[in-house]
Amino acid sequence: MTGHTPFRDLEHKPQPDRRYRKIPVEVEAVRWDGENVQLVAWFCHPFNVEFRSGSAFISTLEGRMEARKGDWIIKGVEGEVYPCKPGIFAQTYEEVGDEPA
Image 1 (cartoon, rainbow, N blue to C red):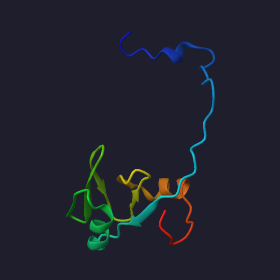
Image 2: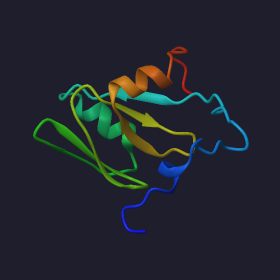
Image 3: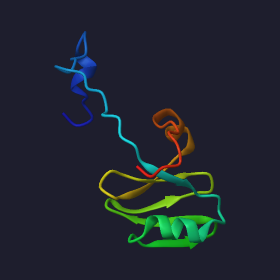
Image 4: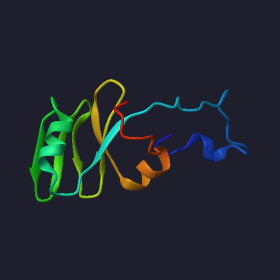
């Protein structure tokens, strides 16, 4: 079965039993502009951030991730931080105000 995709041979693809909607939560976020080093370092604390070649390399719960200029850095509900591309951020989040989540 090497290289075999089981669904390719089916006339109709199977459907999940149920559909789910992501629970709306508020998060905090900052946008990396390539120069706001102090803000990003403060925002990501206690996670380590290394700034190099215009990028911010963030030690996340899932390993080291790169935020490039224009990317958003999100602080999740558990205090975890991670970068997010602008297009995904725009599709997923809307601004709710200046008050912390």
